[in-house]
Image 1 (cartoon, helix red, strand yellow):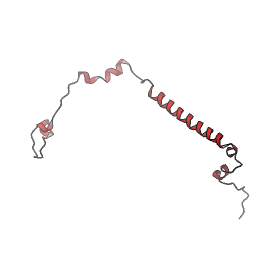
Image 2 (spheres, one colour; image 1 turned 90 degrees about the horizontal axis):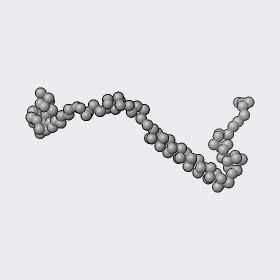
Image 3 (cartoon, helix red, strand yellow; image 1 turned 45 degrees about the horizontal axis):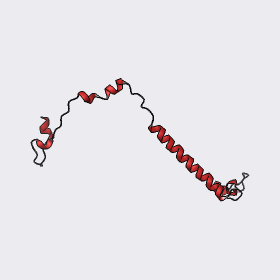
Image 4 (cartoon, one colour; image 1 turned 45 degrees about the vertical axis):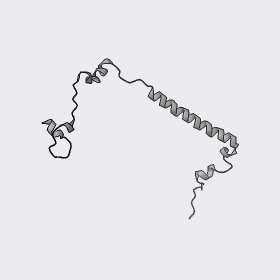
Length: 100
């Protein structure tokens, strides 16, 4: 069975041949290109991180801040269940007793 389609080598074999322009560059040139790519990618990544972290909040109006400060006028209770009656004799006070 013969196909009329041309045969191609896998891409990794095409790129690894000495006839590829990449391999015709000197080792120092290839190192510089790869190093510059890594450095520029790192700079771009950290620039994105800095821009993301220094952005201003979307809504800092007084109305939105008032909604998030409800706790200033609230009353809080701290309950210690261990201080209450121990109904099941497990050595700890029962929260159900404190609710009744």
